[in-house]
Image 1 (cartoon, helix red, strand yellow):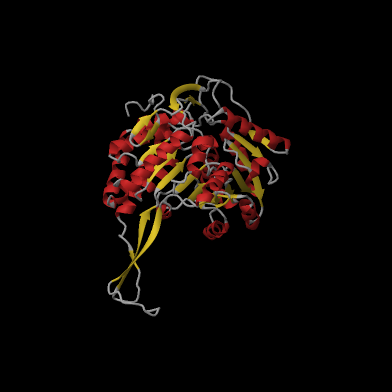
Image 2 (image 1 turned 45 degrees about the horizontal axis):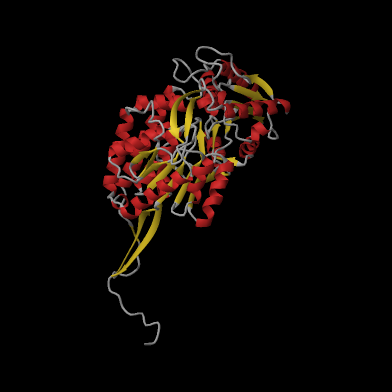
Length: 506
């Protein structure tokens, strides 16, 4: 980790075991979103760099040892990586904070989750049976279903959780015996670059892990269409994900897409029956909407609250939103950092402006904060915002904002609550808050979302699948299904006493 906080200038492309500059020599400055100042320089790769990385991954898969390495040895390497992540937790957490704008504590938690993911997939493959025996109905037939690696995997990750999202792809890909090329977001690539160093330190053979830093329109597009890539896994926006699927279609690659969400947080009145329960529901609504400034695919940006408690709930929510300590993620006491870029802040501002024109009532935030020592004027800060009296015709309710904006809708009946929650093109995650166990199960069962939390928001388990319905994408990450995404299934049928079939004369 000696060079993690000041990454090797220009040489951030890793192919066939070597760190390289971009073939073109192009570079990109990485900006700290807290003050818009550059603090690192990375190589700006393109199609030529991508082809070199894919060739290295292809050669390592076809001719190297990794795909044929015993699962116990692959698992042990993943555990070594987890140990290295724990060792470098503070440096990596700080780097994630400066790169993506989140608080240092959020960065540290991310690193813990990354280590957990590597350990989980190590344990999963190490504990598996070598194959599933299929009864062929004869003692002379040995029939077994086995799993094999897919091949070369293209892993395209987003800017909001750079290392965590990379780990959800890299750990199962390696556990299954694949080689890969990862393309991190061009604006938050630094911790993924650092992870490649840790994989090398852990003993991963050359060519198995490759990275190309560069933009999506060149590096990502080339990975999606490349004939030597067998699988592409993409996490990001709907428009880009659609392009990835279209590019991958002619070669019929395996495709996994996680494309975001517009996630409802449904609060019934009985969840607020006591002062403690009320405070918990409000606190979790704040957590759902404003963690990492709302730049979370599973953010609970749609509060759907029962009408009888709406005024009290929203008033307290707005009061507490106004008190959130906004500032540089590395500063003590800061609870919410900046948005990742000026472009992202402008997008959020446009959504709030359109909502107010369409009749929403501003209850808190809605503007850039006053500058302070913790909030430089040049930083991409935006106040946590609560918009009341919202309805489904508003863009801010229908579309993914990806910022610190919470919209409020109300309902009177259980059926109305479910209808509102499901009235979205997305289906990634949602939550229901109620003291009625029967209602909790009914509503959770009716919600068309890949993850449903009951009386909680945001936790995930490495053992559980993560995916969505509708335009939230296809495929699964985490859990056994996440490992299965990186495997092919082979049926091996052995006849121990072959005999002629005599279908034809002769």
